[in-house]
Amino acid sequence: MPSNVSVIVGTQWGDEGKGKIVDLLAESKDYVVRFQGGNNAGHTIVVNGKKYPLHLIPSGVLNPKANCVIANGVIIDLEVLVSEIEMFTKDGVKLAGRLFISDRCHLILPYHKALDLAYENARGKGKLGTTGRGIGPAYSDKASYNGIRIYELKNWDLFVEKFKFQTKIKNEILKTFKVTPININKELEKISELRKIVLPFVTDTFQLLQKAVAQKKNILMEGAQAVMLDLDFSPYPYSTGSNTIPGMVNTGAGIPIQKIGDILGVVKAYTSRVGSGPFPTELTDKLGAELQQKGAEFGTTTGRTRRVGWLDLEAVKFACEVSGVTEIAITKIDILSGLKKIKICVGYELPPSVIARSPERSRRMTKQPNKIPYSSCGYVELEKLTPIYKEFSGWKEDIMKVKNFKDLPKNCQDYIKFIEKFLGIPIKLISTGPKREEYISI
Ligand code: GDP
Ligand code: IMO
Ligand code: MG
Image (tube, rainbow, N blue to C red; front, side):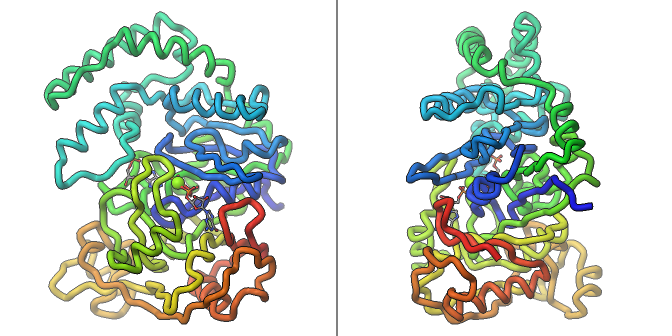
């Protein structure tokens, strides 16, 4: 029986255009659910000429029939959430009765943000390039039993007690970094105002989603970040604080794994990443700068310039395998129009001098002495390897208005067909522009 729960997952380093795809697919959904990450995510949707950068509220919000759920795996910065609620309320988008926030969500508190920045400063040249939103510190507090759930805001006296206890400890740590300590009373005043706006949306989303699954409602799970940033499957420590692969749907929303049906992997037609860390196909030349400008590759969350490079199918193949991707959406193919030659990375080669993390296994698997699969690479190998490229001829035409695959330039068709064949997964959707209506359905 076909399942009614589908998942969207980013197959690269984030910013693949997941938000746009979610908004597009949400038209036929009863629920759109965020299940991991926090406001490190920045999902852009462009509807009726207006651009919305979303950090916490699911990207289905502009489809009035879709209910929006922020499930337990998400960590919440109250200020960011309230500013999104206010933005939509001002725009006349109804949220009451259709935005549901899990009572189990952990809070990102002021000391998490201060610690995130303090650690980054202390790392100096070795900084990771986090978004500075307190993600790592908040998830570590959750895992070390020092977190505070959003539910606790209902019992103010108890919340104050816990907040004071945690802030005092964190202020001691901040002191060692020579960072101004958190002003407990000032922050409590702010939180006491924010909680009044947020608490009406807080509920038991587990019950809500169980019922929705049983009633065969159409549910779309909106992944944030991407596989290459997954806490376990990234080249750690160049990671984010949560698991980003579809398995997280179970722990992050309470939906059993056997209920999951389609898993749509979003693949940007080239690669981008924000922050530090290895990037085998990075273009640091004039062409890279052109792609950055043309693709408007500036972070939705932090405004940082995104690093860009050729499509890395060795990495994407791994992302699809670990995520169980069943279909693909290609995005930003329009940005490649006008390039004379386009390259795709189809494998990695390691210089003989570098000892891979698991050389025997990788050599056995590939039967070639120096080839190494993505899964056997740590960040050291990823920094030292040489990508193996296949070159394609480009196309000149503007393709943003094209609605049928057969009307795409032949070279563009060949580029897309190659991706499909290499991954062995059907391409169902091709996004040709940022606006909701700019896509080709296959
Ligand atoms: P997400 O984090 O995966 O949701 O992606 P972001 O929203 O951070 O970044 C993707 C950017 O590309 C946004 O500015 C989108 O509006 C834009 N975008 C999405 N799909 C396309 C596309 O097919 N073509 C173009 N030109 N822009 C796109
Ligand atoms: P969306 O959902 C791109 C990156 C940061 C940094 C690393 C760790 O919009 O695709 P963190 O603040 O999470 O501790 O930072 O992860 N990162 C993202 N990069 N898109 C994202 O989300 C990201 N979320 C985190 O830049 O390298
Ligand atoms: Mg983004």
